[in-house]
Amino acid sequence: MDTHALFPRRATADTRPEVRLRSLLHRRGLRFRIHAHVVPSAPRRSVDIVFPGPRLAVAVHGCFWHGCPKHARLTNGDTRGWWEDKLRRNRERDLETKRLLEADGWEVVEVWECDDPLRVSDEIEDLVRARRGFSNRGWFGGEELGVFLSCQSETDSEAFAVGLT
Image (tube, rainbow, N blue to C red; front, side, top):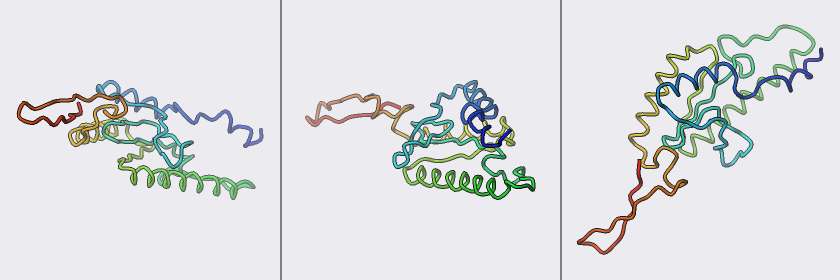
């Protein structure tokens, strides 16, 4: 069968490593969005797991498709050059997406399918909880949900808004 004919059958979302990691994170009480389009300057790009309030994005990379330094190997053959170009473009796109997210204030965690999911879920949980402490945007971002209280001081007639976290 032609290699190119297999592309439509390849899962690009909900891969086994991604589902396993999401399951572990969910069991820890963490809630997140999946396959969210959070890169404003590249609206077609999505991130596998997104924690909007803490602005944490998790990209789960397959070892072959994204060029894992430990496991990505190409065999010699007629299509080797084509595959090298394809995988290089994948890595370049990953790097560009990461740069765009970081420039927009996101922390990006890149996870390889060969990484231990328990260790990775520990690290992500720690990051989410730490970043939540520094965020006044709330779990899904207070601005988007309109979760604000308007308060007025008895001594000051000026109203002010307090975001809920």
